[in-house]
Amino acid sequence: MVGHAFMGAAHSQAWRVAPHFFDLPVRPVMSVLCGRDTERTAAAAERLGWAESTSDWKSVLERDDVHVVDICTPGDTHAEIAIAALEAGKHVLCEKPMANSVAEAVAMAEAAARAAERGVRAMVGFSYRRVPALSLARDLVAQGRLGRIHHVRAQYLQDWIVDPAAPLSWRLDKEKAGSGALGDIGAHIVDATQFILGDTIREVTGTLQTFVSERPLASAHSGLSGTAATGQTGPVTVDDAALFLARFAGGAVGSFEATRFANGRKNALRIEVNGSAGSLAFDLEDMNVLQFFDGTEDPAVAGYRRILVTEPGHPYVDAWWPAGHGLGYEHAFTHQAVDFVRAVAEGTDPAPSFADGLQVQCVLAAVEESAGTRTWQQV
Ligand code: SOE
Image 1: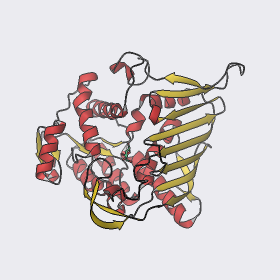
Image 2: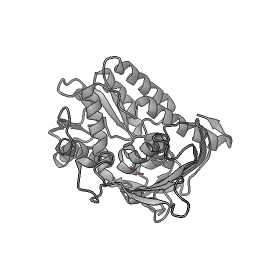
Image 3: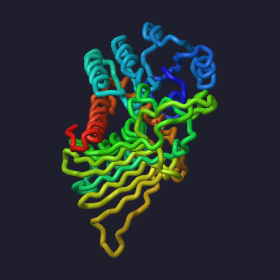
Image 4: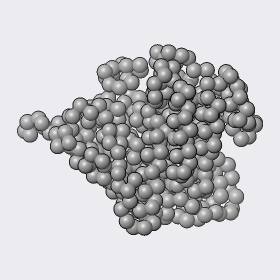
């Protein structure tokens, strides 16, 4: 694994836990953790459960005992590491957004296509697909329980930089992150809605907003935003909020809002879908619940019902606890590791693929283009 901050910790717990709860065809071994700083990486390896650590990720690609490379670094390094790993014959799991630009994403998707011919697999870490309630939402749409889809309403609301004194973390630096709320959390709702609908966004029009353009420099990085203590400031080079409208290929229309300024909303990924036969609604801050409205029921008793997605028959749930004992944020990463390991071992293509990651990148780029030109843009 390359990178050991927030996502590195989330992926590490997934690799650690997955073989203990799921029946896997092969057992992942957490061999080497890579990071820039030798001492910090060694300490992280110890804490997160990796056997070894190194500050030279390239050397790891030469090792015969390494079969999978998990990329948990900021977006500016994804393309270089992923392409080198695929060319070295390593299966790759790469954090989202897959890249910082469409050009990088194209190169990555091409490398993945070449690698696939040699049986080497690549997957993007859109972990929320593996939240049981969202997997169930997709199943309901696929079963036709919602009929023809008319509306998608998607929001990803956070508030961790609403304070102008919050420091300038790498997530606010275009060079490192590619974009702001758009790529970091907007990418999640693009992937999640396309996943639920089994459809793709074809056209968008949007706007981007930066509310605080200068922030204190971070002296140390911890958690999401780090610690501000230097007394100096620097420019915010990404969007704080991204809003856009979308048309899906299948005829649905969608509204999307991604913001880090929704004061009071911590990690509210919310999706509502309205179809001719019913609707569904989800909120990540209440992630064990899927709301479902069955429009075919007698109107006298019909209404949104609150499904507690903790039954053994629900996606992924039977590996965990008895009904009613819910799951959390980290379980989606475990499910992601499980699906990836199974695909690698069974020789099938994992999803979302790098081609899917490229498609999401194209949606993000179209939103940026649209915000600049104030026009609708084809994806
Ligand atoms: C920060 O906005 C962040 O950690 C994202 O980078 C993650 O992808 C999301 O899961 C939670 O929020």
